[in-house]
Amino acid sequence: MKISRIEVGEVNIPLVTPFKTALRTVDSVNDLVVRITADDGRLGFGEAPPTAVITGETKGSICCAIEQFIAPSIVGMEIENLDGIMERLQGCMLKNTSAKAAVDMAVYDLYAQSCQKPLYQVLGGRRAEIETDLTISVNSVEEMVADSQKAVNEGFRILKIKVGKEGLADVARIEAIRRAVGPAVRLRVDANQGWGAKEAVRIIRAMEDRALDIELVEQPVKADDFAGMQYVTAHTATPILADESVFSARDAIRLMEGRAADLINIKLMKAGGIYPALKICAAAESFGVECMIGCMLESKIAVSAAAHLAAAKGIITRADLDGPSLCRLDPYEGGPAYDGPWIRMNRTPGLGIVSAPCFTS
Ligand code: MG
Image 1: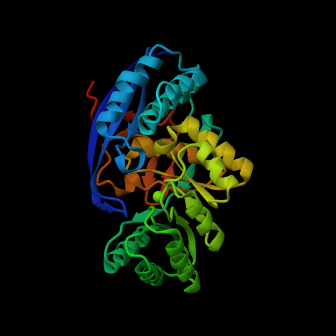
Image 2: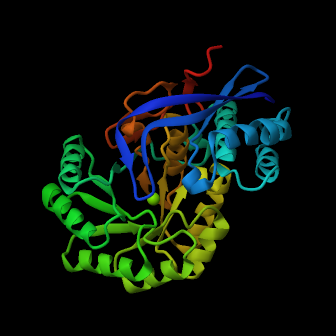
């Protein structure tokens, strides 16, 4: 089976409520969708969100990377030559990790279809379902408490709370949420680089002193503040998870060797797809460091690729794959089933996605 054609389309899916972090506010998922057509007519799907604030990529840059650099380097190659395709895909240009991820997952989709198995099984996995958390956006304390209670009523048992805008006042917000949801709900806190290192230690210790039972704190300081990540990891008991600080396996190894994080957040859009994400998994396995799999503001195609990877790898012990749950509608046909916190893997071959609205023929 050969790669015949690579096309790029666009989806725009409204969110249930605006998504707010310490970095940005967004009210719809406006992503690029990739469709690869094989010479036997089979279709592979991929997706990339333009997350300029994290990967530096825009809609224009992703389109250009795919159409002018990636497509010419892999069109005509045999899908069964997965390693060869991935070397060219990763090597045809520097950076542009989301553009690469969109094509990478569409290639894996076709590869798994050629094996006639769901992607997670081709990746070696056995878990037929995984559980995701739900993100609670930064808002007033009252709104965040109401959003948290609503999520718990909908069956979510793990919440990821966005903070990082108000320093120590964030502790009151987490405390109010903990009081409202009770002790059984797992709470993760994501500062999205919003704190300084000493400030982070003060805030995290305040949460520890109040016994708020926080499972982990994500990216307390700036992505490139390695010493800050080391300082926070060394001076708090709560596990620290590196997100924006880790794009590649090399970044992960540096952080793990330097004890600059306790946990690693893998996102296909930072890594450049499943192929480089598998390298991060292998590095984390060798250090015995557990990973979380996360997503940007992605809809079902990209989140499903991440879910298949999570279902396949034991080192990925946590999932933050709530993209489809935040969307007001699902414009695609096929793929895993999203049922509250549960993502149930498709039994059909590949990613399972059959169609996307931006491609009519
Ligand atoms: Mg994060």
